[in-house]
Image (cartoon, rainbow, N blue to C red; front, side, top):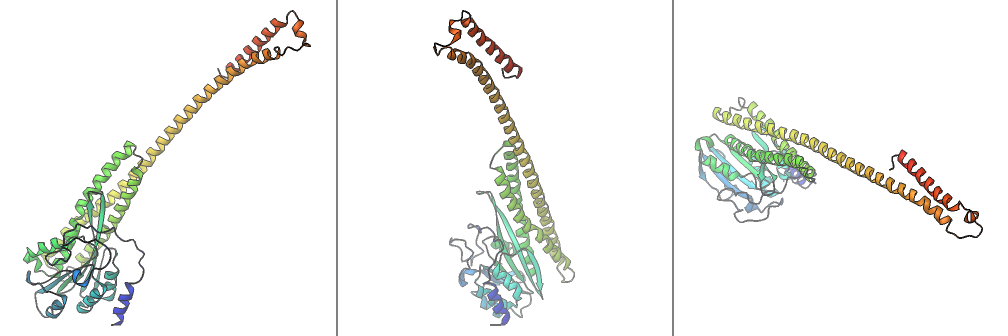
Length: 390
């Protein structure tokens, strides 16, 4: 095994700390007749077997499928030296050994191979000699859970071959292949036509996601002004999805600009140039909408924080008013209790029946006690009244 191959194999075993995408959709359509996933099986991040990872492999000449090899070795053996002939191999979570074999046969660069093995890459375009390595992030909206599901696909585009490596069940490459096979004139343009079709499918898949996110934002606006206590959490979760979507659409514009910059240098067909410019227009629209969604969510979060603060202030005001009213009632009760306590105290003193009490034998003792009670009660009433306790 060559040194670069050893390094690539070792690189795949290094720990990877970047955030992995959400679990892939388990209902995505399989790719063409050779799809080994016709039977349902759990979608995991583990590589599938060598035989099951080859989703479809075909040789095209002048836009028509002329051969469907039983194995990749036939393509490696028969492809070179045939003008106007192109091979398109679709792999689904291939084993590391299979990618290393493909790298040796198609002379893929070791850095591109390492990225394809490790996966979880940001969208990018890199050129290694006469081979393009493209990473794309597909997205689709799941209505049942109201979430965005992200997929990843790697493309190796050479002079006479295209190798697609998917690490999730989306995007659906079978639809892309079917579309191209029904348009031989476009497919006859070669590997660049396949790259265009995959880019177009990925960008077209953004439209339902944009519509779904717009619907979610409209619902959140209603919940914000409706006072839903759970809306803050939903705003945060949707903001994370929008940021993830932005990471998929933003770099895609750089990819399309780089492709457009190489039109003249690499002699891209004029019709294909028009198609790629159309994809760039749609991608720009998607990126602008995503940027707008992020700003809208930030504004909604600010408005929600303001409304929550207002509601809290109103609640505090109501609590303060209730406390003030309660204090007034306590003051009134305390004032009357004090007024009533004064004659009770005087009456208690004279109810002790001690023999040595001068007032007991005084002719004016009773009127004096009653008068004292009245004076004390009136004095307390006037004092509390002046202090607004009564």
